Length: 192
Image (cartoon, rainbow, N blue to C red):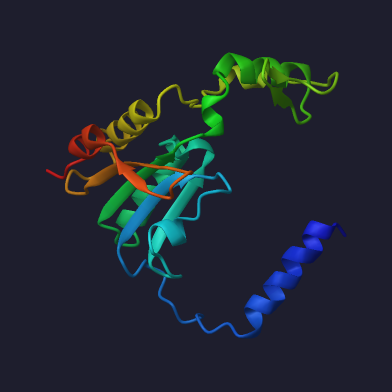
């Protein structure tokens, strides 16, 4: 076993030893959902004041409104009763450090982990690679405010999203811990 696996299993054993939340209902108690980034520096439970059972938290690279994220939000609403949604991106996001072309090029030369330095991204190894990466929109980010607005609009305009759900747009500042509203996004996400 790896050290990480051992640590995770030990932490779970400690957590389960006095676990008393087995009776929480499936629908989130505070009836809202957050779409945010998978970045390890973000702790939605802390920055949004959540306890287990309060809200749905959907995480992916960049906190982007991908088809799968929208699928999760629709299920959150339709089957589990959420009534408000937040799109929360963050400063210093790794999704700002590459483009679709860079990702496709890196994958075509090797599937191993790449590295980055002041001159950009570099592959560590020679093949095998895969050219399938050029068929994926990696939803990279050039501007945080713009990407939050784009994602709120993508959610708001999706045919499966009811017009009476407000969608709020924010950026989490990794240096201060503050949520900063993107007013244009929140306005675009207003419920009708």
